[in-house]
Image 1: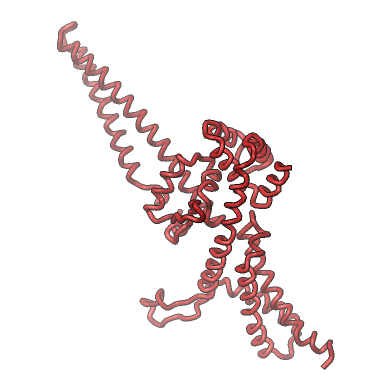
Image 2: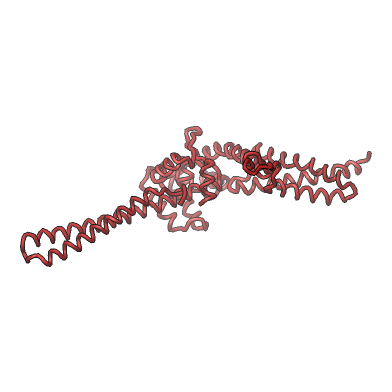
Length: 207
Length: 145
């Protein structure tokens, strides 16, 4: 068996796994837009990507077995994309004859995948929280005027909250004690700018 | 409004508005009776005083309703923003939720407590920080909103 035989045999499987992995990767990126880097580093993202890849491989093997004469790379492309779409579609695996008890036993691929996805999201979220707590604790040690300046700048550059609303919020905060103000301002930067943004700002302010 | 906003405050506001209408009407009737009573008689003076007192009461009740409606609108808005935030970003630290809604902790705390009692959110403690999670009921509320 030559190297080219190995590539020919494994190539389509690799393509299917990569497509499935990319699909799952896109889901993670979309679900955690403000903290993509840390979400992807979480083992739970890896698990979701790996499960997607692993589920796609036997499907591709079945399709290839059913159509042995077809171009394996085209089949891999079709299986890689089609299976991922199917996985997220409401197709019932078990459909009881009696519709009265239908709700109880009908299982859809989308439901099963949704549960797995939700479980992974919860675990990723749990793993991200301690980092956010550390960052906020760190931010409360910075001069509050500097944080306020950053929030004002951010509000002017962002379309999320109108600057006058943010200004009214800053005014409300001015009546509060310094630590509470710093925490609220840092939390604003964290929620609106994301983890990396606040971390970068903190580093710049500490210099 | 479903579970996003409770129906109880609306009923109270309707009752207060009705009382304001009653007070305004009584004030009008007192005015008519005062005009028909003998001028400068004790009855006419009493009716005029009643008319004024009832008009004041109607004004106070209207102001009360307006304030209550503004507060209710703000609470409903806060609840909506909290649910949307939790749905979009996942569990949030208490200060994060306050900042995301541009609210002070004192403003958002009672709203969150109310939502917790209604089973829309769950509050857990992580390293001494309160973390707010969306419950299955909260997710349903977003879908039905």
